[in-house]
Image 1 (cartoon, rainbow over the protein chains, first blue to last red):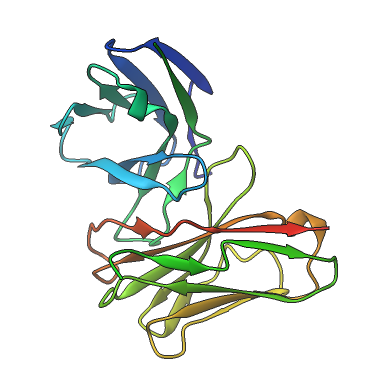
Image 2 (image 1 turned 30 degrees about the vertical axis):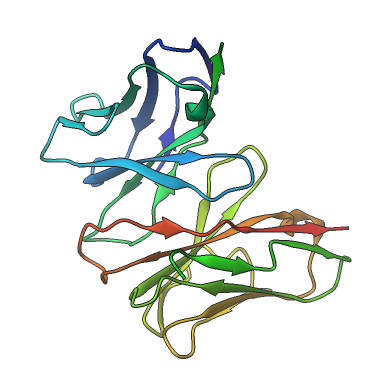
Length: 113
Length: 116
C-alpha cells in the first residue's frame, strides 16, 4: 500500500554542522516529493520539492536528493541553525492521480548549542 | 490575508457534541484540502475540494465527518457526535491550481480539537 516513512524519529546535531534527514517511500507511482518543516503549534511549512525526473535539487542551505531505484529521499541542511529545530516531514504526491499528500511520521531535529 | 487561516485555533468539546471548524484559504486558490494530524504523527488526508466540488472524501474516517465549500472559498469541516478518538489537530491547506499539476499546498496553523 501507499506509505511514506522515515528511518529515524529523532536527530540531534551541533549548531553549525550539516543535518541529513532520510525518508523511504513505497509508492512507485509517486512522482512529486516535498519536504515540510513543522514548528510547534504551527502548520507544515514548505521547504523544498523535487519531481521524479530529477535526482537532486538545491535551495537556500537545503538540498533534496531522490533515489528512485531504492525509493529513498533525503533532506540535507547545511550549517544548521537553532531556528532549524522542528519536525521535518517528507510527503509524496501523484498529481495525475489522487491529489492528496501522503506524509511520513516525521523526524524531530534538535540543535545543540 | 496573506496565508491560510483557521478558526478556532483551539476547541474543547464534550463527547457527543457537534463541532464546526472553519478554513479560509488563500484568495484565488482553487484547491482546498483537510488533513488530520494525531499527536506525534504526520498529517493524514481527509478530503479535497476543487472550487466548490468535493472530488475526494476517501479519507473521512466515518459518516460523522462532513465537509463543505459551498461558494468555492471558505470551507467548514463538521464533526458530529464527537468521540475521544477525534482529538487531533485539523489542518487545512490550499493550492493555486487544480488537479493534475504539480503545485505547492500551503497549510494553515490548524485547529487543535480536544474531546473530553
